Length: 348
Image: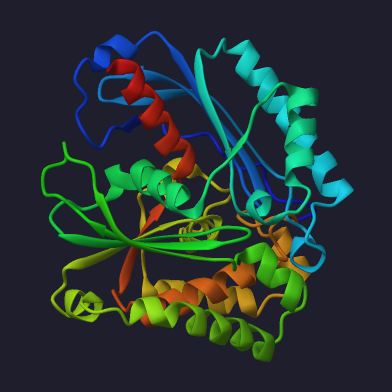
């Protein structure tokens, strides 16, 4: 296989809102846009309100690697900024074409850390017309939880949600109300400056030995452990009162591989489940492959082939420290959280 089959990145037809909104119908007819500029990806959703949720009318996703080399240099590179601005021009074109009436554009860890981010965002505004705001890790986690809320099992009182990003990983402890008209509540949050890009930059991602993989897992275990050892979590797991939800390219990739998809298909991955044993088996299978074989896999491709094992290492650490045994897979997160917030505000 010379190159992966084209991926189906289109969102599911509609998303349910996790909580009721008075006057919700008043928002219908408007068009909303949410843009998430991460360390690795640039993602856009354009949607219209529908019922208690929204229907996606346009979408865009591109790997831009904005944070490539950032851990070593402290700045965004010229090449990374050029790649990202090219993608943002496409987003701006879609936003104009769809006549968006309300929008929010956010940037996360790479822009939080880069010394030259203010200059970069000013250039983005000048060249694309998009005014992007840098959000903190607390807001990033809140939006992720809001976007993933429809996938939470309301019969289980607590949840641990995580997002393995390019430049950071967020782990969020959540109180889950049994009434699906009420939003889930963030109880606690950990944000670590470790993601698939930062780990791959430091450890290497093309040829990863067992010793290198184990070193990544050990580093992440040390980083997560103080949060994992906080009172109450172990008892919740033992009583079966803790569910786990993963929102990241790592878990969606592993789900696609586990399902043996001929190409990535969002509608089959979003909302699916993986046991921890299935996670271990797929991770071991990927670790045994060389870079070229990973790049040729239809659910990975050349743009993720040097990052996927770093993601597996982070996920393995999470599974060891929170032995829930099963996780729900979310191909949704920040953008969906933004859209629900915009539509809810517009309806009030």
